[in-house]
Image 1 (tube, helix red, strand yellow):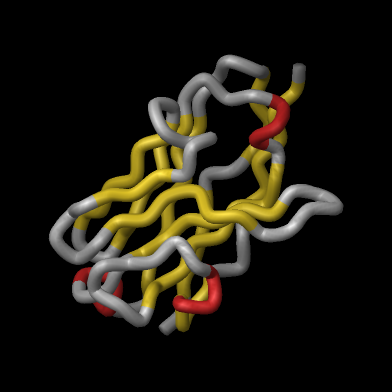
Image 2 (cartoon, rainbow, N blue to C red):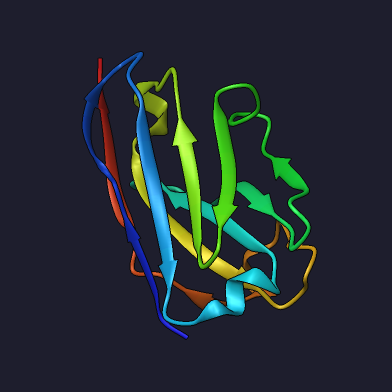
Amino acid sequence: VQLQASGGGLVQAGGSLRLSCAASRRTSSNNGVGWFRRAPGKEREFVAAIAWNGATTYSDTAKGRFTISRDNAKVYLQMNSLKPDDTAVYYCAVARSAYGSTIGTSHQYWGQGTQVTVSS
């Protein structure tokens, strides 16, 4: 399975971006899918996850600002009220579990990442 993440870019603080994650086949409809990010000099961190049934989980930093959703073989991350601290490379990943996971090592397929830069 190959994942293609897109939608990143440069945005001013307070702006919005919508990230997309496309899978090469429909595995993502039966598995949980997560978004993670890695900022320069920091560890990878969990952002949001969506289960096969649409149930969602968010990190504290994403809650209230980001929305994860899925449509067929695509998963989206709508990011609003962006802050400079949100600057990172964002990765989508397919979990081994249908319910998804907040843990990176619980994911079996990873996309190549898309850069999000938020200017102040």
